[in-house]
Image 1: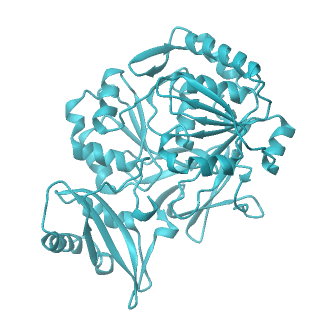
Image 2 (image 1 turned 180 degrees about the horizontal axis):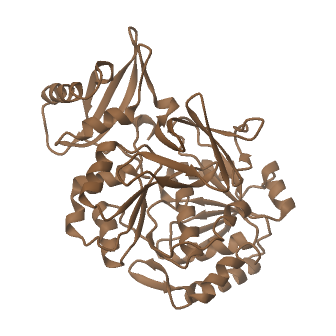
Image 3 (image 1 turned 180 degrees about the vertical axis):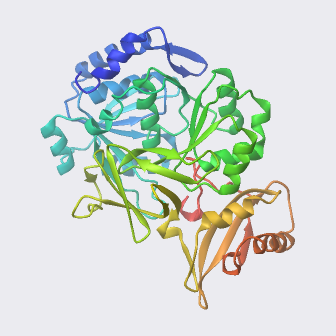
Length: 451
């Protein structure tokens, strides 16, 4: 088991420690070792060839973790899918050319099926030539068709061989998300405990933090905002929680400062990663700062024309369904606009989401931060709309905690924004929505039609 030997050694040294909490039952590392033995035998019994494209329909559970690791060891190319992408499941399986399916049910039982495709993509052929396990991750598709990124898992696994803190960690980011995969490997490689949550509401997640003495919560800015608005933190003991990491989208400064003021003992750490590159090591200037240093031994960063570019040892081989996005010298254009201050950067947002108003740039997160300060605002998304005079106007879609007349709210909101923003940044169009403004992955949705 050359690819995961370092994990098995860690498991064997910590047999009696908690490895996974699932549906209020605790599974030890000894259990995980034994279950992996059963899955190795099942893979042999099913005649799963090395290098097969294996579709894993699952969320975090004892069987799904053990199965993931055994398929990695068998040099399979894994395609994890969760219920969050149910509407696109057939499209994703076809794009990935899935050859064998493992469907993990809610009771953790597994169904194995032979699928209809033969996978012969050049990236797959390269992985098979090397006899390396692979990983296929789909982008959210928020700006178009979802892209399928193919990774060689060997360089990705290499960064987990260095021992770090052993933490009890919530698997909030999903099984088919680069952040979720990173959380799983980080936790297991340090003999920490994976605490799964079926109820991903603020109360559901914080109840798990309280009950299982969770130390690390990796999440999104949107979910941190929901924690604050729900006041779920007042109903649960969070004294065990040492660190909250956030990524996947820009954080609003008002949300960050409010959370830090409430929980000065919790370290807030901004993370940065992409499906195409993996998760970079990061260091925030402070818990209330949006300035962050990213990189590490496996990554190089540079800023070109205000856009962050990254070169990574763990970068994907390429897409299954799109041209290579890398420059001739191997840099990946992230599309994220940033400011720089020495070694630190401040992420302003996606270049594609910048609103150009009469030649002036408006970053949605800056406007959202100001609107989020208003007492009755639960959520807000800011986006641009075409205008024949200025090119674009700034628009805001808000969800309120209590009903309010739209005209009166719009006037109040514009006055509030005018005190803190330049005139061209103040929203000209305001819509009050009764629906949530975030996706299944707790990420802001700026265009509801692409949700």
